Image (cartoon, rainbow, N blue to C red; front, top):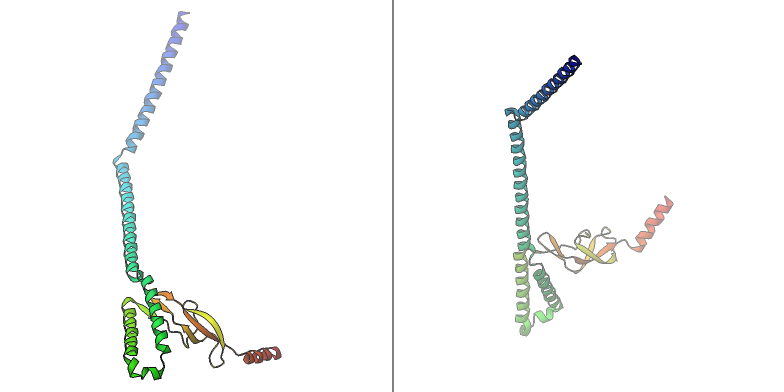
Length: 209
């Protein structure tokens, strides 16, 4: 019995020894892995990744700042160029009235010495308005004999005319204006179309063909 007990004790001690050895091996493996993670090569690689991330962040921040600067400059430029839009609309209305007054004065009245100075004063006001337009960037839209452009013109009527191509502007009712490259007011125009007789003859030719 004693011998059997001694054997059991030895076996138990041997098992404990084996377990402790396994634990030591595992601990060594863990220490080895930790050492591998903290190796100079790994540290350098991590630092390079962080440096690259910081560079990317700096480049993105610089790009955003540049975009903000450009937007601010454009907003400031637009404010200077187009901030007078409401004022411009008012003065083109004044010019419309001046032109109506000029067109209502007959040649007989113009030659009358009693009102000649008044007519000349009105002409000077009209010239002053044109000079002011040029200074702030207002330009009259050329319409007569031009092709109709819906970006610049507003068709008020169609006029039969076989002397020009259909869609050609043959009458300007109210002049249009632009402020720099923006439409301030479209020109109110009459646009040419084929005469009814011409349309009928063309339709007849198509039917015959």
